[in-house]
Length: 343
Image 1 (cartoon, one colour):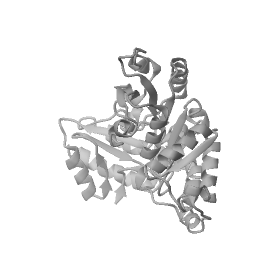
Image 2: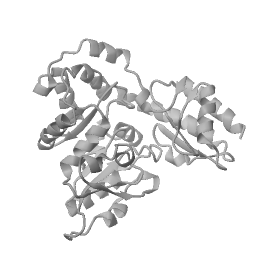
Image 3: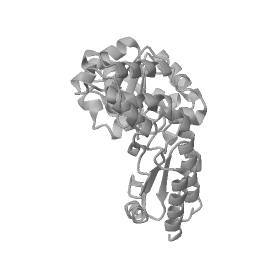
């Protein structure tokens, strides 16, 4: 099976498995796991920050950050298809006690021009805006990248408005690879950044939250409250170190493979709709025309050895990753082309 459902399906590399087996460990709740301490220190260094904390999931990292920046009864501005809104179990409400103020943005790219009108006026009988959340790359917009110039405008506007900005950077290394700049530069104006080790970077478990030392000290309290206090977590951190330092170098391969799939879809405009300009990283989303049945198409793909995701009645998603080779993506593209040709 050529599995293109998600980059969360990546399995640890042989080097990761070896590092996990030999990892030096301690009790992280006591702050005594040397391998995890190293991962947190080096993650902070990669992003040019004072501190970092390891969390089991990206959702936990995002929601800890939202809680840190807000008070109950406030609003969080986010894009209308964002992960923090649609895929994190309403935790903005249930954990942070806030409501989302959603903004629809073309290709999922939140500009300051879009954000500014959504900021609540400073009057006592109106819920106050507390935080702006950006997602880069944007999953459900098709892996689109928010350029640095757009982010710089958001950072400047938010600073003037007195608002913190959090990045859901689950795939921020993909964004940096697409733009050809470092993650430190791409994220320099955010107050906090969450990024995943377990997607394109290939670690089996884990994400990181980076920020100031004071913020991360507070994050440790929230992580414990959410059940995220782990003991000999160096076993996981050992894989995370390889993910952090080695795996970003090869993300361009995933982007090229996604392009192969996208161009095959684009070759069948009578039955499928895709915007090739949106295919910027490792995600390909397209729609079937004439009310085509996405679930049936995905089932047909599976019968021919290709796994994909139906993300709506008519929409399908492919996600490339290092467990699917270029040759396998070419074979998958041939299957997609065959099915689309049948109409």
